[in-house]
Image (cartoon, rainbow, N blue to C red; front, side, top):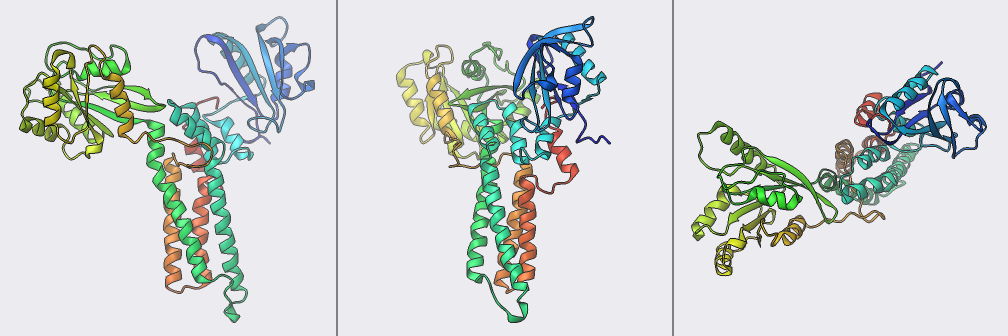
Length: 466
């Protein structure tokens, strides 16, 4: 009887659209048989060696050929899913790819669901769940940092850390449960001081992993940089200079920007989401008022604020203070960079006076028109967030999934209960209960004993074909 885990699935695994080639994948026990039925080449796929590529024609028979193609065969267990896998590389016509896919379904394959190939790799033991999640992160990586993080997790850096912690808890549970066999003798097989040290060390490791989530989120999603300042100071021009294209409309008319405009850039391998905003001022224009409302929202969620000032403005020290209060508010100084813009229209003396009035603020001088200071601004943007580096050789292990973080928080709570139990002199049996709870939640990070509902939720975020 076929089940969702042992039937044969198929999908077009390249993005839909005209291109050089399109690739279709079959995975499951009938993959070889289906390939033999539609492939016309010098060898039969069933007799071909694993991990080999063969040229031929694809069709129901010689009179209904759909395309010439390369067929790659991966025989179990030497494949992505550990099942028999066949991949067909045809010409990149949407029409051709869909006709071949329809033929595969006609011959007995089932259309694959989102992430179903990777789900099978997980269920068949080729990947644990944290590695499976890394596959989706690798596909969606948009910067060197997010790529390195996903690749490190796919290689098993997080899995190795979690499995090492799991083994330590298993050893502690085994020792405590051994004491139960000698309960009448009141024997301790592990000194409670030693047990406390072990649990504290596990708690520290868990806390470090939990704390790494925010850094992982930055690597994955990027750093939010919000450009703020009065109307017509050059915010839109700076956005265009940073993204190196005319993304925002620039005019001499004050209040041109009515909505937020967001673009992503990469600086030193990190992703930055740069947001241009409307200047804050009193207005009776409902459209501009909505833009101002959105500016305030963007300021609230910014990782880094760039306050843009027009160097030509005659600003007193009080004026500068008012601007900082208006646009920056209670943001930490390290999360604020003041940009003195339009330097090409002013003298060095005026720039120096304005820089002095800004006191201890981080300042960079630019001209969006000439490009002056843009390279320095990029470096300051990168450096303002500490320019974090990701290590892929095991020096830094970073959690980048909310599901992983939530399970680690539960681990931490269970370990806290163990420490309280040690202090209160609880019996080995009760200490073991909380240790097993920590073990269960730690196992969920790598996908051990997870419910079908959780697995469905994880793999539903994958694309079809992966």
